Length: 289
Image (tube, rainbow, N blue to C red; front, side):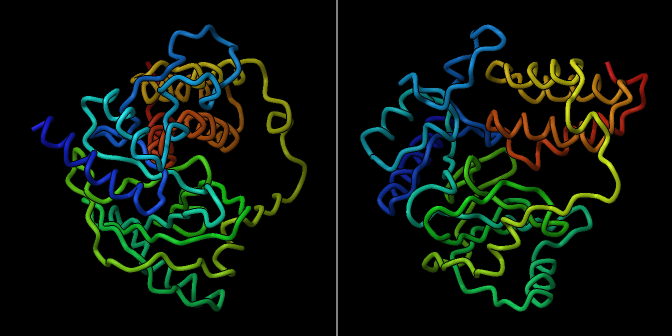
């Protein structure tokens, strides 16, 4: 099955490159399928996004060149799918991930958001996820700096911008196959929705805790521990670092944001990182080991 899934993934990824989409191989867990080129770098080494010329930089390996794609898949024999890099080029792909599980419905949430801010969600290509969710693809304007986010616009709505990626249709994962649900051209993103994606959150009332401005050395060290995670250990390190961080007495919201940002910086999907950090935060102290 692995060989068959690999061939199917390569074929689907190749079709994506023909549409000008930058792609890279992923495994059944939806993480990059090529081991990090810098897993043995000593702590403190500046982070590389492919400048070294080697393979193994997650979403930064993504290419729309078929020959280069073949090289990537040859280096990833256990790939079963592909990721599509977001936020690149003159018409950057932006993803709106609508969850429909665990008591939330991102489809309804997006409809309410559109009504509140007076915009129409245009017809665009829609990808169905194995869990019942939907991925809506949009084209952004050149130079749009859209950050990745999870649940910031509304519960059940995640955003994929630069540095993030969408699982491509035809990918096989642990939970099933991603499929095209509505095969349409990619629509331009509504300006009002783009404004919501790029809006800077208003600061909370009152002075911010000092820890938010200048994290103590304990938190800095834990963030570095996550950033230096070898391939395959990122989620374990994130959980361990989160447990330790919540034991320090630091502002839990600041800890949560800092650790999720570190994990996303390493290529961890933001929603999955948020779940891991939340699991550590909610774990009884005796279980944080």
